[in-house]
Length: 412
Ligand SMILES: *[C@@H]1O[C@H](CO)[C@@H](O)[C@H](O)[C@H]1NC(C)=O
Ligand SMILES: *[C@@H]1O[C@H](CO)[C@@H](O)[C@H](O)[C@H]1NC(C)=O
Ligand SMILES: *[C@@H]1O[C@H](CO)[C@@H](O)[C@H](O)[C@H]1NC(C)=O
Ligand SMILES: *[C@@H]1O[C@H](CO)[C@@H](O)[C@H](O)[C@H]1NC(C)=O
Image (cartoon, rainbow, N blue to C red; front, side, top):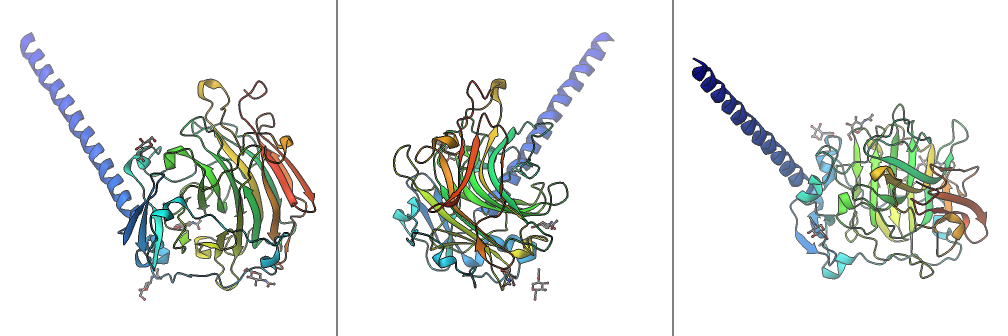
């Protein structure tokens, strides 16, 4: 009798284990299928594929397979190949009147994308596997930038820390239609592969607690996404406070790349050296007068593409806030502040060739006049870890130094 019960129990036990194995492999099968589906979506059929010396693979995707067509709102979208307008006086905004040519991206030494195609950095399976979940791949975590206070309950995604300059509209009818600045480029040390360090522009409308809309561009070191520690060009957008919609680059349909020779997510070819040569990205974002689309240009010639105004409700009308500066993620490994650097890793006070900077900062206002920001304010999360110093002067106009080393006896 006892034997009989024991046998039954053992059989039952084996059945349970078998069931667990089967459902386990079934769920890993669906996960695999999900990853493959995403890979197929991201990696479009290409006319040509170019291997970059830094390991990136660049696929030249025909305009008819442009990622924007994956978006239900843009099935019939006519891609705008050039901006139709620039804010007044933009061409002569550089005090020294020099041309800010961009050094070609590394992959271009191994080939060019054919006519009517755009370069898209290929996503590998490992890149997706490194993400927290398939759904969150290529997305920023909901963070606290537009609240400008320390988060009350830090998530396990880590704490985001900032050193930024910001300007808000000063009347209900005021708007921003553009911004322009030089962004100094460095290769900050990032301690943990799941942390990042970046320098960027944010243009936004709405509020964090209701429905924040942003368009963002700059450079970032983000190993989880790019599998290396180089600063890379990126764009971002969200129309719902980073909750669900929006992503980096073209990982979800949104930003419309039009440039045949410039790949988002590719490394910035030249990086500043302490006490040595300084490199910067001249960056312009503006709202096209007739289409309302938000254009992005690097240097004076590289028209990267645009964020269609249809992606947004508030930004469709204009931006109400602009921010410039650095952001890092602090995972607090071993309960210590991260030693991830912001900017160059030097504090603002160290100045030129040591600290990272943004210079000649302009905004374009509701009259489409481009001018220095009026009444900007600075914000830092942890002054003893990263800081910022804003000033105005003749040659550099509105500018600031910012950054810091992270962990130290004063930052722990
Ligand atoms: C695209 O065009 C087709 C045919 O004109 C139309 O039926 C469809 O509703 C359009 N889709 C969108 C999203 O505008
Ligand atoms: C990621 O980087 C490592 C180390 O550099 C390299 O061995 C590996 O092949 C890379 N993986 C991918 C998917 O690029
Ligand atoms: C945000 O964009 C998504 C897709 O791009 C769209 O489906 C959604 O309705 C938008 N949300 C808002 C609040 O506009
Ligand atoms: C300024 O630019 C915006 C966006 O490009 C446009 O909608 C508006 O009509 C322009 N305003 C003036 C006064 O030119």
